[in-house]
Length: 205
Image 1 (cartoon, rainbow, N blue to C red):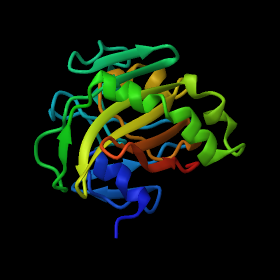
Image 2 (image 1 turned 45 degrees about the horizontal axis):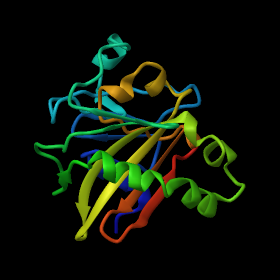
Image 3 (image 1 turned 180 degrees about the horizontal axis):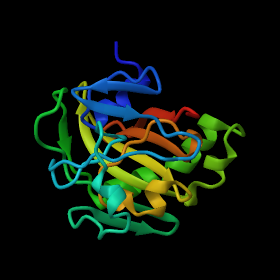
């Protein structure tokens, strides 16, 4: 059975089980984001640029070499009120999981966003005020995929203080981060049933 911690990597097109701070899969060193919020980006040509917290052992990621490169032209920027995010193109190419991807529309994204504040307040209560009271401080990446017959819209949230936002990495690659605590969280929403399907906040480290 797939655990919630696995789903982050399946969604990013990398099928590994994250059960420790560092695991390896096909020559990649996968590292969690430490307290210093340092992480590595692997870029490959999968529907443009694709990023996860991984890199080939002994190499330096291009995103680190060019921290303020231009945004990916295939990403559609969505700005509405306090919302600031990008819609990602569907991922293509070989992966370890038979995932079918689709591209959300702006109207679908904004419809889901309208329900998120109340969902988070109900789900988190007063336990995580950084998220519930500071939602406007998070940038978003939106993508769509099918799971068990469900058409899911996945939203990844990155706090504006995180390195991925500070250096504009979130505007250039499909970014997944392990660790980092409540700087990062994700939501999956069933577009047809209009209900939230999955929610998780990153582990502290």
